[in-house]
Image (cartoon, rainbow, N blue to C red; front, side):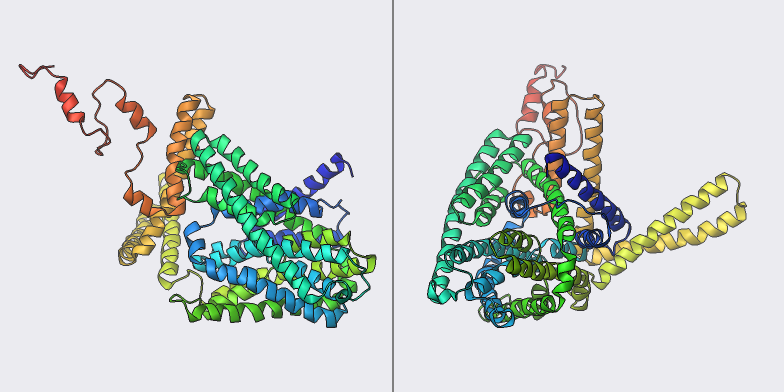
Length: 581
């Protein structure tokens, strides 16, 4: 397929995504990523044929680095460090144990040889955090739970690729129909996998960390937003491709690089507005990458193979759930034995149910098809795509209900009351505005207008008093609402400055500086970085710097942004004999 055919395929893909996006925006019950998969499945089963928009190489070399780096740059560094032990337990120890469980079971259930069974486990068990984390954000689940799920998924993607590459190399070294014990024993296979994981982690962390530190120094030195974005792209793909070329895990290296570059307390003093620009750019890239991945999963799912292998797919789904549950609960309970802040059983249920298998599993099975005999390749394809489709649709759509049932969302009674009051206040204000408009147009009598508005004004007073009482009683709610309001106001301010720059009403360089001031405040609000705000003096806005440089005595505002010797310098500007200018 030529470049023109690929472009038409991508246009069709984004057309599907646009339709799903509109529906998701209009109906909160539709989750965007799950809607993409379901729509893709429907088009694949019922609609016109669309050329396959992605290959395994495209996922592994183009999309995966973008998704990994974006999550690494934007993840809460402090929360990740605080929960690194349970994340490593789940992503390394737990993931390898789940592969072993799947391998042992699949040898007897499907008749796979040892190496093929391990390969199957390495492909089927990697988890994908995208859909679950998006639901978490909507439900306002505890930050620790979101970091656990996201961190585990990011790391086990890297481990999965290492195990897959190691086992595939062993598989290619001997005949498929022969028991692998003859040419590669289980102990030797386990040692090879362990060595591969160790090299991937050590090499990835060293190379990625060094590249991330160098990128941070360059970004801080340049202090320019477009340059920062370009350096971040060079870092993400450079580290990934370099490590991939050497046969180790580019995922681990890209994670380390993004984590170092995105850390607020990193090796270089990067301005907050630069951090904001990097995160914003990668957020957009992630939206495009996720859109391509999830629509494509639906489009390339072989519906006919799913039907033909339906019983085996059902067995595989149960096997994947059991393998994950048999790993998650014991390991997290083991972690709880020596920790002062244990992970609750309710949170463990969510972690176990978050085993959605999507992008990495699909990429690996697409790659494995070229290395396996036709019959085995078809069986792998059916089983893996069946598990991916099932977990995306079933786990994804039921996650919100599970979180609510376990009472893990942020829907506290006082927050629900606050939302109800705010919603009703909007309704009352709209009613009063309509009544005023009708009365001014002489469409309702004055006596009717007075009766209607009197009742609404009394209700409005009661609602406003109740809201203020809630904000005084619950400081956390007040802080949350303040940040939300600040964000909306700052975003409006940002858009207004952009508009006057685009119209040519102010110089572009001045507009860039003014936008940087707003982005600095947006970064503070979005990351809730109150400790830095409280320990450091606020940066002087660009317009105040210009004002201080103008030799005219202008008093603006009540805040003292001046230098300590401002009064002395002013007094020196008067005639000392008579006090006159």
